[in-house]
Length: 450
Image 1 (tube, rainbow, N blue to C red):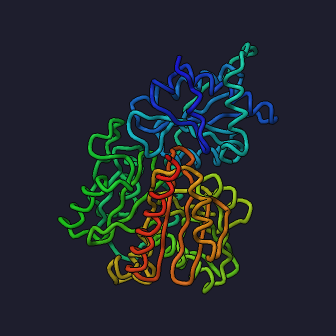
Image 2: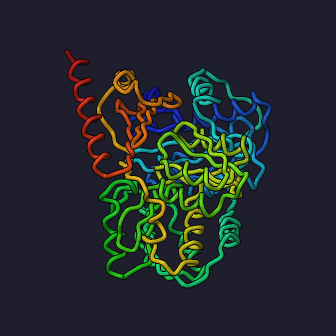
Image 3: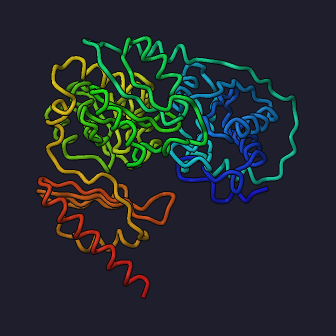
């Protein structure tokens, strides 16, 4: 049996199969999860689904065995995206649920996302350490075994997405499902909406033979870019392996930052007096729009549990991340790549402008995107000292603002690296500051190794 010490991460459970995560571990986690729900006084069905990875179905069955042994009933939704899973939990009034997926990680990885009542994410701050501890305790199983049934709420999910559509003209779209679990939903959504689509890698294949399941990987963008140019499509999109993250490309195949898409959605969806959620890795254009529209903008740490908690607590209309996750009040505060796509279809079809021109007002600043540097958490303190003359906040790592540029740096939750974004009023200033901070981090590393 593998040592599962390292698989309990900040937001979920994730590790290499079978070295760190196998069926025996998954069954122990299923049992621990059910006992955790019982300790909280939650009794009811557990929703369970999985992505298209080669190991996902076996891990799902093992997790279910652990849940069933604790007298909980399981409703199995089979192959699903994470948003369809969240939707199923909310629609079923379930006690909780589990989605077997490693999101955008490579094929040899897998994991489990856990949620409680109402789909509330279970992560480091609200139960994941307790579940980890329970999974390691010797445990005598007793009582009557629960029952398992199958359910398919995908029709209801597609009906919901279609109800949010208001297309004004036909559009030609390139869509890349990354051989993940979103293909069958995209197929049905486009059919219902009458969208002409060039469909790339819609067939689920857990080997991910065509490209990385991470849309932010430049190599993963090549096929969609080429197809956009070949077919003269209005725009393109790429979804990750579990269908909760979406990357957009304009009519020239240019990759669009998640913050730019969020700015466009915020400007067109949020109303005066409402609130919206962004993270420390956002953009000044988001703040500009919120100020202009009279929308209260709340800044939270990076990561989906933080945004979902803030969405629920504040009743925010919309939330967004640089990484391509978009959250909606009408979707119970969860993220949905397909709902973001529907809103984008609505906005593009309502304009006679090409997508690139529609985006131009939201590309006022020059943004680096997320960068990674080999550095430990001590680099944050060194940067804090170096940029002491800037306006500093320490909500999630370090954010330092100046009049014509700013940066945010935070240690990764899963790797010994520093995540960094830089944004400036001009491209020259952006490049200057990226080079400057990069040089500083190299100096920090050299001094630390001496």
